[in-house]
Image (cartoon, rainbow, N blue to C red; front, side, top):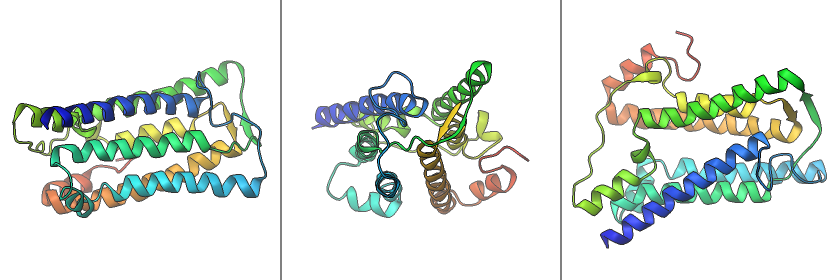
Amino acid sequence: MKSLILAYGTVSYLSFLAVILYMIGFVEGLSVPKDINSGVSGPLLESIPIDFALILLFGLSHSVMARPAFKERVTKFMPHAAERSTYVLVANIALAILFWQWRPISTPIWSFSGIASIILLAISMLGWVLVFWSTFLIDHFDLFGMRQVWLNYRGIEYSAHPFVVRGLYKYVRHPLMLGFLIAFWVTPNMTLGHLLFALLMTVYIFIGVIHEERDLARSLGDNYASYRERTSMIIPWR
């Protein structure tokens, strides 16, 4: 059983790596079979509801499954060690469906070429670097379920890490989300479809952050309240 859980967690983690790498190509229009602007644009009144539904599918599954009440119910039917891997796997599937079924809307909003295009692409790629960097500051393998299945395989009881503020988290509470926002919004070629994607993902990010912070405040108490008071949420302005 422990070997099966480890294998399950490993597959989930490897699928995450495949999906996040594809997401970079999808958003940036780099080396993937289908990116955010690929294909022929269909009727606007058909494309917008479909794209909205795809992001809603991802957002609801990703946010609902992250809530403590949902985790408590799920772990009645599966081992605790597999819960995080299941969360990651479901998010991977939702994103894969989004990439597959996304309807491009090619109406241009802005377009840059030459050195301006290179600079904007470089800034956007720095956003992706920030995403990955942030995960390692809080324990990348715990975040994506590998620590849980590995400890279970070794027969070691899982315990959450203590609340510690390090690196970028000293300046913003959610540098990972800041990285996503940079990656989504900074682009040399903004189409209406890309704008819709960036806008809806931004709305989801802020809704998700609000719910996450409520959960953190309940579990961490005064430590997190003090941290939230002295540190900006996403934009490092204080």
